[in-house]
Picture 1 (tube, rainbow, N blue to C red):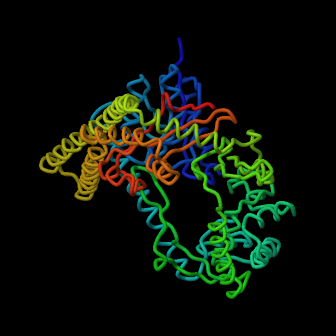
Picture 2: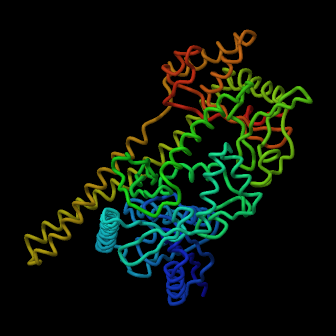
Length: 543
């Protein structure tokens, strides 16, 4: 008899949890469950990601695997490991069911019946509620500790120059003299007139290791000892070094279904006194020097580069303009190839002449990107893409509406049970509260999905305005000056990705709104609400 093929999914919320016991325990319990059920485990997927989001690396790989391989069962340790959002859980289960995959939960067997669905829904809603309560309790506890004069951090996340000491419900910073000497040296170099860039290079040349070189929990992409100028700038601007640590500088918020960090107003920050590494006067002088260096950097831009800040390297760096006096011409090149070899390596060895690159990009922007026929092709492609996204949103709405109808039905059943059966009042009230809370949440999710499903496509008038804008650019090509070209590139949000010294990839966002186009050429850099990603015949430009 052929055994059923199973895959396993396990999730924890953070990297720190993943290095502890939770993830291995989940995998072990899922494997044991598969053995009991005589399933054959053919693949395992894990995530270090929040369960309140649907877009997760491990889950995405799982969905791709199911789409291409034969799978019968997905094994998950518990409901909240698959998702902490009941609506997302329903979407995942429905998607898997369409591929013939059933979800088994180790900690709970749910019958394929209305009663089983009710039990699953109640447990999922309670899990979400408890998670919100846990997060809120944790937040209140941290605020209380900060107001009591304690620092909230982890060992590797303490500011450079400090060691974090932790005890139950309290924590504080002490000075790490080895790192503190580096901090003081950074301030000294800055006040002597060195830039953050020069300081980063000096640190590298003296083989001083960064925090990321010593702690795995701190992400670092560059080679050991490579300091980023932005890291130096953050150290100089950080008030912790003058003896004040702040709690609550940022807060996590949901934006379009994803969790992002938002800066909070400074008046809401909670100040905590910590040991100072440099004095107040030195810190203030350093801030003045930072401001002066910024002004100097702005004034030192002596030559005009049409594609300034628009060219990007394969290694992730933004290409800069560089003038060669001996050759009497300028180049665009990756800063790593000349100035930042000490930070990381780049596999594109040289630069591209600025006149050739600018000519090629402008030719494609004005002649091909803004070609009316190309625009119509791209508009048609965009309509197809938007239609597909709208279908996905509609499917999400249907799932939520189906669950909402089920909630309404179960509320009716609950009312009948109250009238005909002698249930304890506490049990009835608990079930009622869960169902009502879920009903409110589903209504909000349906409304959000409906808003997101509204078509962002332009009107016929907007499309014609865009075509007229393109025709106007082409008609005035012989008389377009540098400033006008630059404003057009800003309006189109042009981006140039370097493939090699002989090939680049050009992409742009075309403005649709009449307001954005109406100010051209007096103010073409205004923000636009509706945009179109451009690819196809103008994507690759060789010269």
